[in-house]
Image (cartoon, rainbow over all chains, first blue to last red; front, side, top):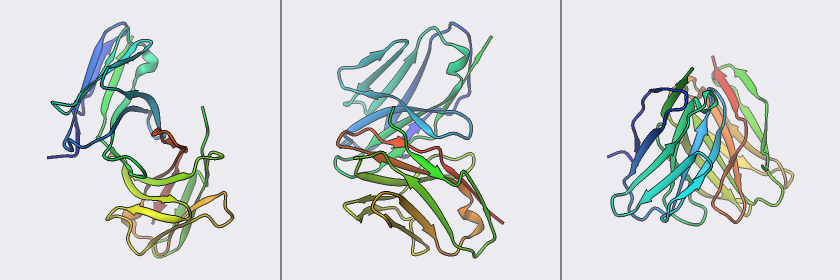
Length: 111
Length: 112
């Protein structure tokens, strides 16, 4: 089983649509969870951290289900500028431990 | 948002040559990381560095790779004898006391 697994997409949605991405992780001891966004040939940029209680930042909502080892990202009212690859990222341990990346889910928002 | 910078942005080299990739971290962020991303693949961890020593490395980070902070500020990744399969985007990342890692813009390495 992959450490962090995502549906690669692509998800093609019209502007204004709501889209949801899912991610599962294999290590139940994982400590921290993030969604990063990556534009073509650019660096990953932090979109938001994911907390057990769920968190929202504008049009973006992230949820974590530790029992199912499942993370989600919901984007409401999609904009053209949301087109990117969304990376599910997990820190398997605290301290100096590296991030483990999923392969990403590609989103294409169309006019 | 804090900014990590990297140089060069692009590097083309011949197989067997040495390359040094440089990173200027965020001031007071003491945890350093190198990741790589082969075209079309996921981001992969190479090495983490803290308190002037390697704290963790992946199986990718073999004897051909080394890291250091030569002047106490910049953070470098050296590949001693490049191979074709080293062609990738190399990202430096940096974090402070919180969990968030900030990534530099990357160096695109092409080995011919």
